[in-house]
Image (cartoon, rainbow, N blue to C red; front, side):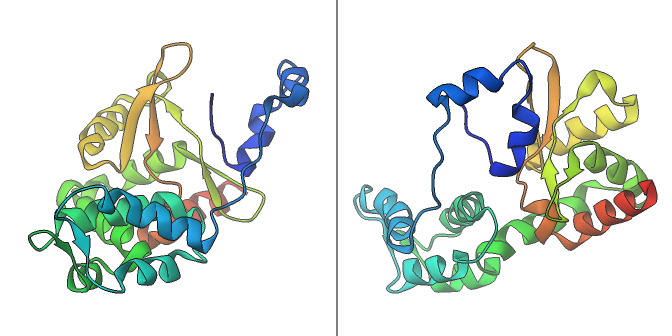
Length: 207
């Protein structure tokens, strides 16, 4: 079983896979409704004795996530950061405000990690690395596109390994076993101003 976003279908559907994917093998899933998202947010906390949300916080998270692209990974990341900032056994509005909400949690973390790990003279390398892990999509934005590490220049491979512990870059393996580097969250390409600027510049340069 594998999951994919709609914009990845052009990559997945080839002459070799078309018949298999057309034979009832693909199931399209609609985004969670607001009540479904609320349940996804609250159920894990309800399952832990002695842990709870401050009143009204789940509803606030649902409202903030409503119109965000790729909202589930964003909510997941925000909840992880919220857990790290819990006040005893409570997940609080104050901690959520510090994170900057659903989108701010990911963007704030990414910017913090970049400032700590990237030297000023490494920005050009970072631009090249992230451009290798994304591709323009049909909506004018950018989609994740894992890069094979053996295909990257040594300096880019080294940078990818340094960034991996921050979770901005995820290291894994392709089906053939070759090591790959992937963007941790596709939303970074749109919501993180620094990265989005790099990618737009790279796309415009190629035209």
